[in-house]
Length: 385
Image (cartoon, rainbow, N blue to C red; front, side, top):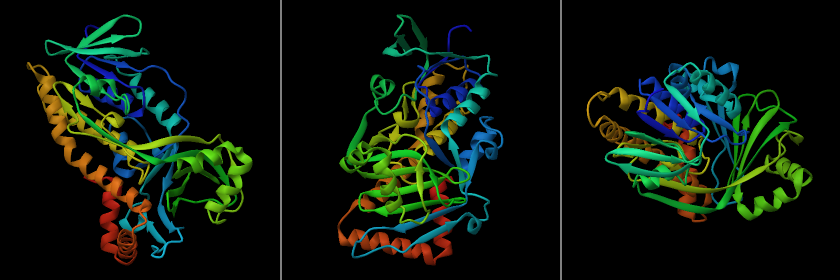
């Protein structure tokens, strides 16, 4: 392949999806993706995201690699004075077979890589980026092996500490929490069916997501010291804790994978694109794993990147700058709306203030009693645009 027209940095799911989208626009594309350990996590992708993946050729039938999410059950497990009612959202109310699908990230990556293999204008290089600079309107990227590449369009999907974002001059705001998330795979005594069950505790939810049969994926958010102590005790301590946290609704619980913990923070940017730089995934936004929004938002980034490239003349001078500005405009409202929604929801779970607790409980009562409000909540939660 001759000199690239676009460079994509970042080897995660959003990064490979972005590289495929850029290459499918017709641009000669290099994807810089250092090989890392397998991502053993799962991702709950909502129906609009799944529809995009199918239309983009990134997956075939979701049922071949995922498990349907047909219900969302919320249980207030706090002992607060003002408690919310148990609330059940059912996809049938919205006329849908499922809200979305829970996928293994390993299987998603395999499907994405199969789609990438057919693109002759996409080259992948397993190299770490060591430096980035703009030289006369073209982005020059230096690699760990001493080589360098240059292209007018630079796409960063290189995480919260994004070098592309920093060297591209995009300002970010990041706030950390004292809470962390612990994730692992479980086998339950009684299956979840298609229901994702959230037990809301004072420091965050304890969420069980169906993974087929009696398997479930756990996302437990709590104070980091609590999680660290529980993790240090090994499976012998975690098992009774999980049974208690799930209120013994699903019988005995076995750990199928080691438990991993990661710290939580929020990150936002003033603009998702400028001067030929485009930011996707956690390079542009990050927040706690509430409402299954993270990868869904990242893949909406990719969909808008594809639309932005289709909206400009790629043969005209300055096309990369116009594409990045087009992308930034397209993403502004979605990033602001989703970031505000997730941050507000997460903080409402943590607050000890009675007025905020009353508002949250009142909101869930309204959703429980009003079909119209539930329908609107379905659309917001699934990222319908």
